[in-house]
Amino acid sequence: MPKISVIIPVYKVEEYLKRCVDSVIGQTLRDIEIILVDDGSPDNCPAICDEYAKKDDRVRVIHKPNSGASATRNLGIAEARGHYLQFVDSDDWLTPDATEKLVAAAEAHQADLVIADFYRVSGKLVASKHRVMPVGVMTRREYASKMMENPASFYYGVLWNKLYRRDLVVQHHLEMNPALRICEDFMFNLEYLRVARYIVAVPSPVYYYVRTKNSIVSQT
Figure 1 (tube, rainbow, N blue to C red):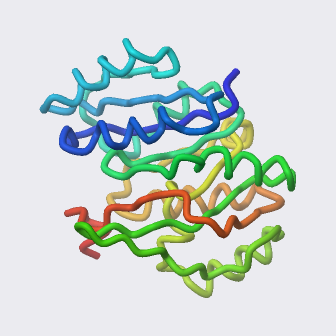
Figure 2 (figure 1 turned 180 degrees about the horizontal axis):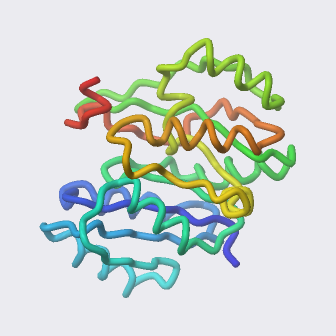
């Protein structure tokens, strides 16, 4: 069983996919599995995914008909075998020690959820997101209080700057709601918060988020 399962939904991102997958393959923590879930992408992404699986036995590829990001992530969760879950969007990328920092924080504090700072990328400009939470361990109540002060913040609502315990997700049958067009990740985080006891915040940015996405969420 790998230490961590990194789930990457893939759809129409052939221009960025290699940058994303290379950043995960190159992580300083080697005990990982990388699950590439091809959501029926009509471009060259399926072939790119298969090439990575041939080169690195930690990479697993799942091809399926197009059904949206939520259903794609749910399939990744169902197939995951790691102790922890991490989500990466296929047009973003990780810092080289992202998984190592997240796992180290979880194990040092017996935390059920780890949350980290991230970089916003707009063209060639890279800026660090200013934290809206003190660093260290929090209870569920303390975390929820901070979350309600900034409910629209990506810091709290998204999946990709966090680390989850897979056993909690499986035990409580948590998943993304495919019926939602926006905020499905925020709702997943709320459900996970109901079963998490201790949360730890990591000060160092671990993720590069491409801000110029033409998505419903970014437009909203």
